[in-house]
Image (cartoon, rainbow, N blue to C red; front, side, top):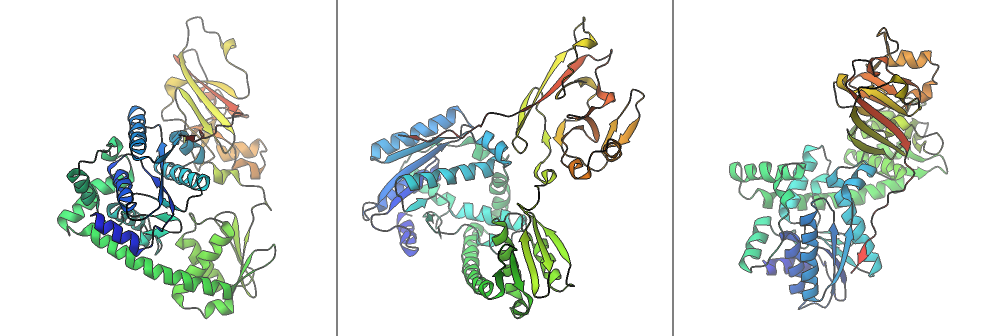
Length: 480
């Protein structure tokens, strides 16, 4: 297997003489295999290895065990060891990301930080053919285009994947043959994450029921798509230079006459490139948005459409003018806030609004007096026993209602806000505490009568909303 890996590294010119290679090592079989493969290559090629390890703190004791394991190997091999301690769960909440996505970003940021500090030239990760197969299948299932079908590339700028020529089973066999120890990440055996479900259920089914060489063939297909993608990307770049012109502060203009002369296969790629360039992002630019711009190019002058990232596209005489509204118009807070489940008892942070929402439940005492109920604007008590669903903090949704008096009279939230003369531009950004479609509290405005504490109340829920003044920062990396 080592000869295969060395040949793969040479084929893609991954490592050169005197390179400083920042190597991600978690302690698992894949990353330990990568480290030992690079150490073997180092016997013939003079380059430097800097090991980077991230302790996510999710698995507590085993996470610390992994860190000590990698540290010991580095001490034995005389390698520079750099470790970062990161609270990935907190980072995921602050960035509105899944644990998987937050973990990937944290690792990437740590690797790039070390690269800069040591004047590194390459970053090596332990992705192999099974990782590529999982990525390719997930991308396809989620509606990926040609770019997503490329899977994981062997080289992407400073990023190199020396193990992409081998399968997980080959790595495990090699580690077993040479009795090389590694740490077992128990989360890899769980099916909580999408990638694990693809790994444990879908790929084995394809290998047993369709073709045992599924992983290998998916990798070969991704390599072919990569070649096609590189050609398309180069042609799109040329077409962009010819068809798209910056209009000072107004945006980007796609010239229709030149655009119409392009091959159909390039038109969608050019539009996508235009939208991504003005948005400075690509995640939420979909085929539906690209098709909408295509339709606009065939439409009447004066037509306008709204696109993600506060972008508008307008049909003008020369073609389509794509411009960003960001900075020209106040950010729409309704678009930024996703529903969050309240933690009973506990607290959650709403970073978009710089707020913290704290909840606690307690029994109503025998000597309870209604005078004890807080009269503060942003602290309220509720009858906990009548709440039917998990409470959410969110913005308005269709069907929302609120009880407005002791008789139990209800109003549509929309009508209530109109009656209260809440400006239309502010209604969509109002925070709400909701029990299903029942609004139990509009913070700063009104509490639903239906959920107020009564004589028969047995348990009380207190919800308190405060400004989050502390800046929770990532733990700095510790240089070992």
